[in-house]
Length: 489
Image (cartoon, rainbow, N blue to C red; front, side, top):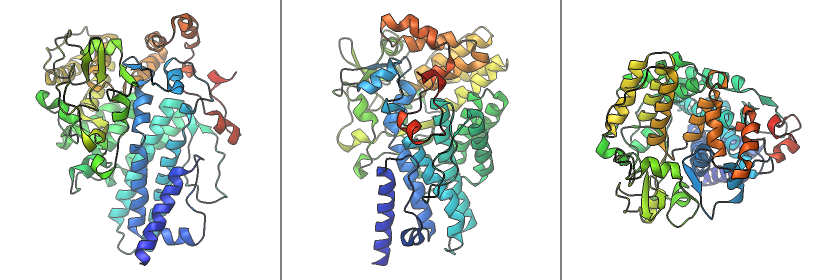
């Protein structure tokens, strides 16, 4: 009976956090409930699993944040007005799409684990050093991933490293620079990578759904590429290559990356199982009758059957044609790569959200190689992914810009609707002191009404306009926050 009451309390505590309104809401303050909570290794793991679950529940948001301002997505008649405003770059701080609350709830869960795991070890004598360090490593990974999303979306954000446990917590933290945030993230990831799991779980769901050493390496490589630290990219990707745990799916099996998921190519995936009431958000976004989001004209040209080359990733795989000039996104609703067999029943909601897979990190490596003048090596990797897609090898002029364009095109074909396109475009726009920012601006203004294109193109020469504003309620609540200057009116 005591055990049942205790875990009822745990469930209540976690639900309280999930339903709170403030982004730094705490677990119940000091007192009987808190003292009864942090008593065993199971309590630590319960909060860690809550962090995973919260992040997974953001899959709809992760989809939109990675695709909405790009060039592969088109909003339908039921597209919410707040999201249409973002797509058209008509962005104001009162748009609740700009609310960063979900990320900071995840971060607070991770901070709870990081702080309390060592304390619990002093109470639970079955809580070994190995288990403690492993759980803390996963918390550091999830927190780091959340911060990496935040700096790419907002640029400067509060760096919160302590849980908000009591009324005495500092709720009014100013912003830190992108460099400060990512410096801390990289230190944490490198320090705790050795304690991360390395494929020793009993199920494929855990091996692909928890923060393994390859997941650490993929995140470190992604951060290094964002920061244009190319030697670091190569170092981290080569660890994944040398692990022997991950490989590319064969061309004929490419769609199995999405159904059933957890493929040999997967590195880290947020898990969904409709049979367990773990329902994803991407089915509702892309299913036939939602009228929310469809492939853009650019996407239909890339993937349509008129492009006879893209037989593996094209029409019936990434997208499907259901009528004359009528296409839908297929990755999250299809059962097979036939453009006809829809997922049914609870399977509709069981498509994982893939954060990292092997093709992703290989193309990160190709980009890093090409930016350091190692063109032949970069071309070999690019053609490896093309060969998997049953495409002919490409010949590219040996210069950095030509390779950048080719790799960007390949990433668009390989990762369409996987939440990567906008961040790829941002990276292109930022590289070499914004030397190619006009290419990014062209993409952004392609989504806006024609009478606004010229004015907006001029405004977006300021790179601060590429990031979202801080939601106005946060500015009102935390007087130590300064608004992104682009949105100060």
